[in-house]
Length: 190
Image (cartoon, rainbow, N blue to C red; front, side):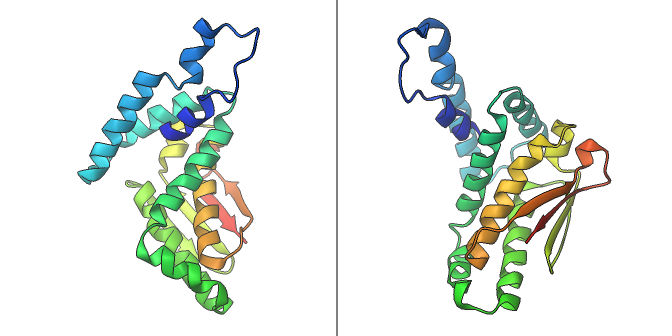
């Protein structure tokens, strides 16, 4: 997520009337702060340490204050799935484009299950096929946001993971959100 923030804040151009003293720190992703956090999280990943859920929730709350929060969450979700997809199962699943739908839906279910388990450490996960339905209770996104916007992160990750498995980008709909008062966050991918 921090890498997506940094990417969105990098200037593609400098406007003539822009006050660089004001906008430069934001446009460069608060260079030192963001870079040190990214470095800290990379070290934790190498050590196979989990990032505390409260840290993730705080980061989500910070990102949600931005006007471009949804774009950042979509980009971060896609990148999370791509990073997860570098594993062997995803590479094999990429060949699934020539397999029957019954097999590709099983591969998609398995891929999404592993991805969501990795992302939702203390959440309860249930996945069913036909169409692919993902139910997640106690998601960190629901704890961080009561509007459901933070769940865009998971929507984008599910979309990317299913695309790797079935060979086409699915339509992913977030039909229920625990943050908005439902009993769980639910996505349907078709």
